[in-house]
Length: 274
Image (tube, rainbow, N blue to C red; front, side, top):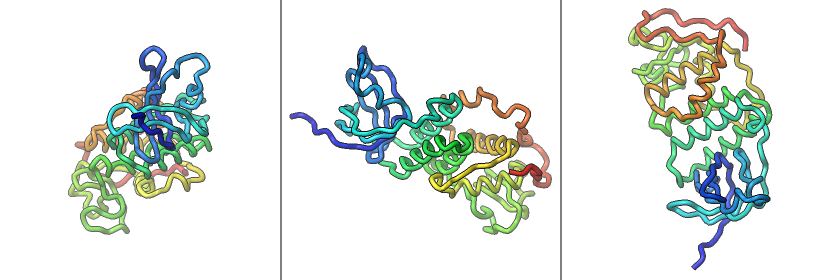
């Protein structure tokens, strides 16, 4: 008995050759989460599926969706290709990294409509010219609970206050106010502006962002702090992230955080305007 094909909506996140004439197309779908489909004949000349399965294409598709193993892609009903990730190697790298990170957080076949919407809004934002690195930071911070790491970014993790200067403490599991800085000599010594953005990023709706203006010094510090959190508590490091790191975008603007054994000092100020 033939398997029934169903309609689904999805974003193409990767495509790779498979056998002589076929390809494997991975989608983040609205209904089924991540699913991998075999697209038969896609590598043949004038294949109808070739143009509608490019990475970062959003569309309505028809296919046989299987709980186990490869699903089968039949056709597309309507698609939209996001142009910026295809036109710019840096934007492409960040878009790839964002979807790789989401995929590492959830098993294939688990419905994650919230993250489908976030992924779609990321691509819409990239096409509108939003900063790719900052969008990646937002996704990284909001994904932490999915990796089993849920730092306290709203109030002090020790006393619950939110009216004092804050810094990030891994040992306390999030932000600590200045009253408790002496309790953690290894706190991150982050600037007030960077802490402000971390708190904002944890709750912001990407679909509602109209513009992003963050100076390069703060961008570099955000990148350093989030990398440290992922290295120390998550351990997720996709290949696409290695490529981004190799770009060395921060050059002279990069200001690393103090070493872990640095003596506690006052929170640094950031005099650059965003």
